[in-house]
Amino acid sequence: MNFSKTTSKSTENSAEKVTRPSFLLVVQSQ
Image 1 (cartoon, rainbow, N blue to C red):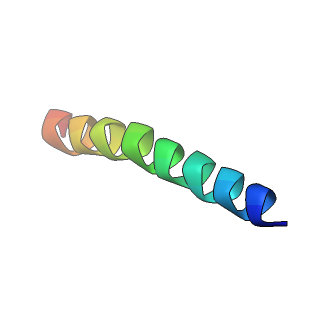
Image 2: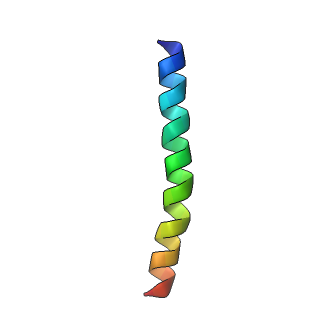
């Protein structure tokens, strides 16, 4: 269970790191 939770958190963090720069680029291009 601990492993699953850790994996989920890591995945969320990775997704966040990827999404943020993209979001910033979209805002800047507008």
